Length: 495
Image 1 (cartoon, rainbow, N blue to C red):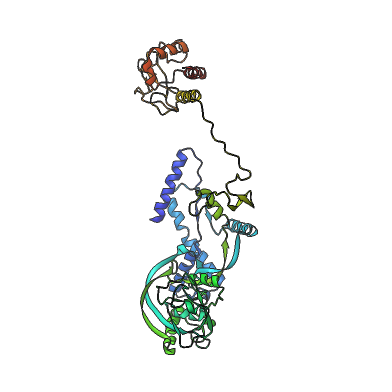
Image 2 (image 1 turned 30 degrees about the vertical axis):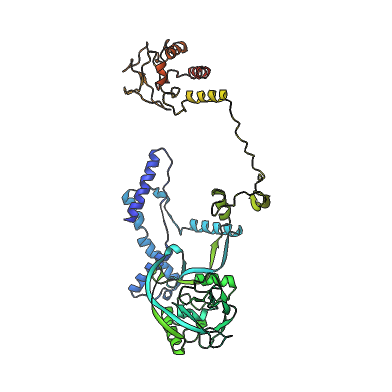
């Protein structure tokens, strides 16, 4: 139903544009939908009992199965559109994995890289442990989950016997902690900033990690003490960047724990390792309590499994013109725009691609000075107003008598449309009209007949002066020639 509705609306717009005389190309094409197709094919092979994981077939064999699925099912959408009668150019159908498209992607990628607009680096991404790929924020679905909030304690190394209680929903990531953060305005912990605590896990390597102060810490949440895991949480990653903390990644791409998690957790799945970590803390005497907790967890839209915030080396695109572009469209002083001009303030400016310092309030180089409009004298203003009225641009009723397409009768009768109805207004491009006295056909005696001896400026002038009420009539077509229109414009400006 979604495809039917979406493409029907597109078809309506395309056909309407063609009826309006526009050249319209509706290019049909299909997307390879790599993640969705991979998930569907893998599920089908598992149900058939052919594989337990896609790696069992190997890359080339699995890719061949994906192409077979595409040839069988990929054309269904195109066939549906053809049955609907979509007005596409079916001779130019395209697929995103066509060789021409692949070469175009490579060419654009290389061009962006040479311009310095794309770069590669390790950043925090939404990682799907099933599809083994990074997901955009739009592909993550937040779901409410019931879990536990674990309270465990760590000892301050410089002050023996002083313990800090930390609340977390993921005790399996404790081996990746590189610091403990508190709010410097919190009087309970402000004096401990700069000291160290012993990490609770792994048990064989309880390293010392620092206590840092960060104003982003919510002193009201939990105990007011946050374990900082830069490799597995976006907030912790930002804190780690501010305080230059090391990064320890304890998860494999498939969601299992690696050797850095310790011998007790290595090789376990993340959900199994969570229960195992809580058990280790309890046996070691550092687990205070655990209580039910409900929170929102991001799920992969494709694989329907919890996503893992993970550092991954990816390609990213720069947007260097966001700030200048926003400053150009927002008014001065508004949030997000350039500051309002203020004499005596130096600010950087961009002109012609080069950066220079300009004095705020001065005229930027290369921009023409805007001169104030000179005030008109009353006599010039009157003449200009009469010209506007004569040309039909005045909103005052009864002044639009110079618009082409209407005619005035020497008898002073109202102009009517060619269909016989009385005309109430004039307008550009209006149909040729007849006067009320000569309807239903033109008469040689009528002054509106083109070429008639009566259709002369003198006769027209006498009709205008003899009947002042004609000024209120929306009549203006008797002077169909440029000479007549020019004469009447001159006559009006002389009154």
